[in-house]
Amino acid sequence: MTETEKMDPKELIARRCAAEVKPHTLVNLGIGIPTLVSDHLDEGMGVFFQAENGVVGMGRRPPEGMSDRHLTDAGGSFVSAVPGASTIDSAFSFGLIRGGHLDLTVLGGLQVDQRGYLANWMIPGVYVPGMGGAMDLVTGAKRVIVAMIHSAKGGQPKIVPECSLPLTAERRVDLIVTEMAVIRPEDDGLHLIETAPGVTVAEVRAATAADLIVRGDVPEMDLSRSC
Amino acid sequence: MYQALTVDEAVELIPDGASVMLSGFMGVGTPDRMVRALADAGKKDLTVIVNDAARPDRGVGPLVAARCLRKFIGSHIGLNPDVQEQMREGTLEVELVPQGTLVERIRAAGVGLGGVLTPTGLGTKVAEGKQVIEVEGKPYLLEPPLGADFALIAARSCDYVGNLTYMLTATNFNPIMALAGRVVIAEPEEIVPVGMIPPDAVKTPGALVNHVIRRVA
Image 1: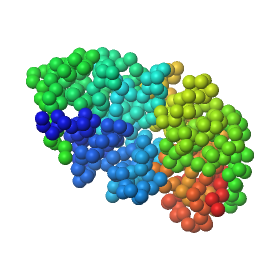
Image 2 (image 1 turned 90 degrees about the vertical axis):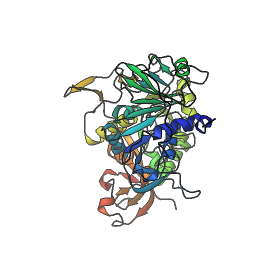
Image 3 (image 1 turned 180 degrees about the vertical axis):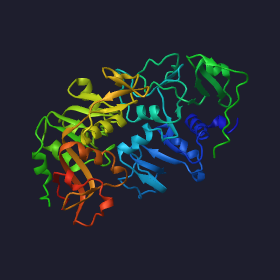
Image 4 (image 1 turned 120 degrees about the horizontal axis):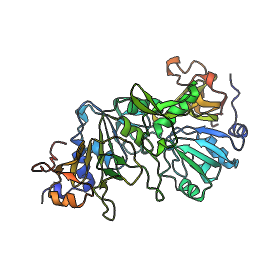
């Protein structure tokens, strides 16, 4: 068994997403798996992380006892700021997001459908957390990647013909990264473009309710590009 | 020059049934002393406009726990079970607004605009019952301005004429809400003499601030 086959599914997703982050860009990472993406990036890449509560240039968790209660990420956890960071108010922060100044956002998902539409903010009658900044992020970011576990607890598919949960935006996301596969939504549907190490195309199809388009041999995820 | 109010004096200004803007993001940059005093005073039927419901012991949490709210307008309630419970009971009305839309609606009220045209929410539940307006070939949702009777502001520093500064991510909704409350009450961490805050560092001019809360002795 290789090292990647033993990798925690969330770590695998984060590592694959990290390979999508380009140097010298402005990036927003959502709560949960997306937050892990920064752990797989070289600090020298010149990537600035934006958090919607108003920081451009968010850094890692501060050393024990060194946190400041005025500086947190969008989940309310203490963070640090990198050299060159700036802080902004909420209107400016969402101006960056909605105004097309954000190069990439990586967000979690409850469902993604055949059209590439994402649902990630409520399960009617069960749990209503609210959309927070998700609708603005999906509407406004230049590139949207959904990072999620392939199936729901209990095994129900999350990649479906049409979202049954309320949509986050009427916008086709750019990429779906799971612990089983990388899927790219396009005009003609969902293209299966990579499988995770040790996962077959048939296994991905079996765990996916939406049709997947497969052109030729599907390569295995390259997890060596990130650090 | 302000006569700084005690927290209790400030709370007396706010009647039951008032609409109150409360700054903060997960309780960071929230005027906590005002929140606790409003909860202790047993205020009723408040409409609160705040980014998120934080947690039961943070941000707006104590006001929810003390059942002071009739309506909550904000973007996220997922980490406060009290809100979820009161919403299910039907005792608390919740209006969820995308965060970027929320801040722009508040800004619109504060700067005299008749609303906001935003692409956020198009084709979702948020668009239900709202007008879609096309500008230069692109559709936008028309979102109305959102003002309030009071804006409660958490500042880092305040000088004797009410100029305010904020710190790091505790800034968030504060400078926007300071424009949009008909009465603006600032709760600073420190009060400093005029001249201590350089003009370029002032984020909310004192002209917007009606009352200042005394610092903790």
